[in-house]
Amino acid sequence: MIVVMARGASEDEIRLVVERLEGCGFQAVVSRGAVQTTVEAVGADGRAPAGLESLLASGNVERIIPFAEPFKLASRQVRQDRTVVGVKGVRIGGPRLTVMAGPCSVESREQLLIVARAVTAAGADILRGGAFKPRTSPYDFQGLGVEGLKLLAAAGEETGLPVVTEVMSVDDVEVVMEFSDMLQVGARNMQNFPLLRRLGKVSAPVLLKRGPSATIKEWLLAAEYLLAGGNANVVLCERGIRTFETELRNTLDLAGVARVKELTHLPVIVDPSHATGRRSVIPAAARAAAAVGADGVMLEVHPEPERALSDGPQALTCEDFALLMQDLRSYWSGKSTDA
Image 1 (cartoon, rainbow, N blue to C red):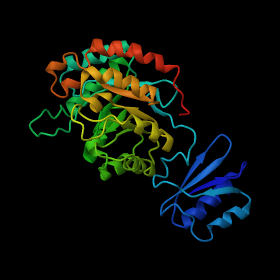
Image 2: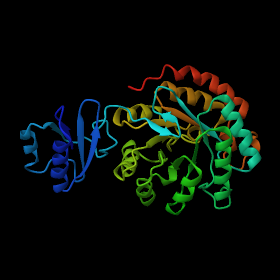
Image 3: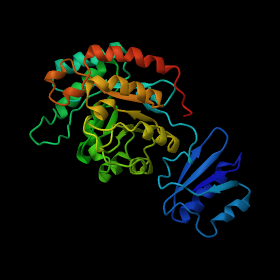
Image 4: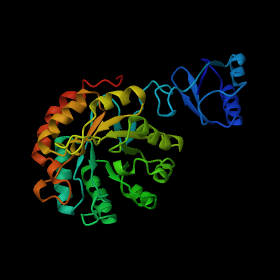
């Protein structure tokens, strides 16, 4: 539930409410707005236990709102204002569409620098690249590991772009944090609850991809693990879901993007590369994501897609990426954060 404090409530009055909630077994999370302060009571089922309504009699509490959804901290009931997540100076969720771009896998220093320099010149905001790669087959390229992280960090330093890369295991959190600016939870790990709990305790921003068979509610509850752990810097990423359709790699759920932006204050971006799996339709899918109100897109780029060690068919060439960026620029100034 949400306890809305009266306007002008003092810090002592807010503290008394927090103590009362914690005494009832809730975790109390204080959110200070420009005008009013709210206290989110997280735990149990979100309903007020008997007697807690007496807070209203004090005159320091304006109203108590039960949670309508199981995801409490992620809900727009808690925060009407949009959350903007900062990644080394890049703001995700603001008026400007954020573009993350880079190779699916870091294959070599030369390959990475070609892509990093090209996406920087075209106007990308964040460099993406995989050092640890979860692959369906154990015989496929699994990434360069820590060496790939070091190459990413070096490319980010040269270009000035922040770096986002996937973390697959609780054991790898520290080393990935050392060499990157944002940690990605891949689709296969969306419900890796030990990993989510660990990432809830870090200060680095987290990009949470939707699982291929996950409902919107399950996706937001995965985000709730991060928020409940104390990490407020969470960005959601729609990357396509598995349906009966086989013409494309996945089905891009654009209606789901619009709906999740109604339900949550967190930024939502789209990965058209994984959602479609086809280079020819990625530009159209990226434009559609921007049009439906996504806060950003994540795109795979490779200098020679036909020679890529992973996901070559869904990688844009450096030249194709530059052309797409010219189209996407038209969405930068017109994007609304109130969707």
